[in-house]
Image 1 (cartoon, rainbow, N blue to C red):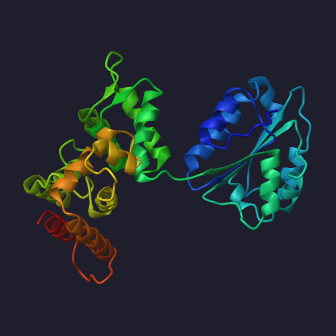
Image 2 (image 1 turned 180 degrees about the vertical axis):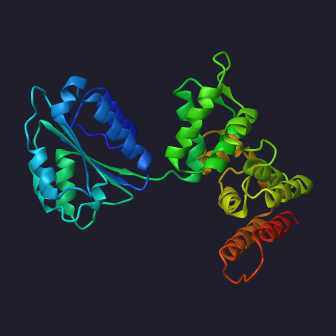
Image 3 (image 1 turned 90 degrees about the vertical axis):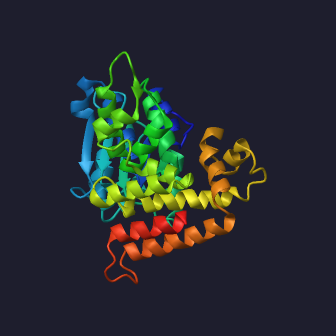
Length: 342
C-alpha cells in the first residue's frame, strides 16, 4: 500500500500505474469522466482476471445499504493480496453512518472505491474528510472551464500520437463543449478515421467526422468579430439562423462573453503591447494564443468592450425569455452582431 496520496487525476493515475494502492478512493464531483477513468482502471488492473470472481465486487448505491457495503469491505481476500469493492452511484446511499465508521479503520487488504457523481462531500463532516484523507484519497472531479478544453483536446490527442491545429481544436471545443465523456468519444472516432501515415486532425476531418462546418462555426464567427469582418460575421449568422443545429445563440453567447471578458482584462495587463505579456496576464497556454486579444485591442476600445459585455448580458437574458415576449433567437443573434460590429 502507498503512503503518499497525490490528489490530482494525473497523480492518482500515476500511482495506480505504479501499483501504489491505498485502502480508500473517495471520488466526488460534477465531472463523471475522471471518476469513471479511475474506477475503471482499478477494476481492470488491480486484480488478475482469475482473481476477480472471488475478490472483486461492484455495487450500486441505490441497491445496497451502508451496512452491507461496510460488511463487504471487511471481508478478507481469497488467494489474493487485495479485494476490490467499487460502489457506483454512491450518492444514492441514504444513511452513510456504517461507511463513515468503517473509514475510521479500513482494511488494508481492501481497496474501496466510492463513486459519488454530481455530488460533493458535506463540508460539515470534517471528521469524515479527515478519516478519508488519512486512509486514502479524497478526489474532487470538477468540470473543465471552456478555456481549458483546447489544452485537454491537444493533450488527449498527443498521448495517442495525433497532432491537431488550433482552428480544429477550437471547432471541436465549441461544438462538443465540456462533456468530457462525449468529447473523448468524438475524439476517438476522429482518431480511428485517420490514415496511419498522416496522424493530423484538420478542419476538413472535423467537418467530415463530427459534422462541424469548417466555414460556418463558432471559431470562424469569433475570428470574424475579432477582425471586425462585417460581411463574414453576417454570413455565418445567416447560416446559423437557417441551420439551427450547426450553431445557435445558446452555443456562441458563452464563447463571445468569454472572449470579451478576457479582452477587457487584457487592457489592464502591465505589458499589453506584447503578446507574451498578454498571454502571461491571461494565463494562456502560449503567446500565440494571445494573438486574437492583440487584434481585439486594436479593433475595439476599452469603452466599447464594456458596452459589448453589457449587451451580451442583455441578449443572454432575452434569449432566456426575460423582458422578451416574442423576439426569436435568430433576430437576437443579428441584433447582437450588429451592435458589436457597429
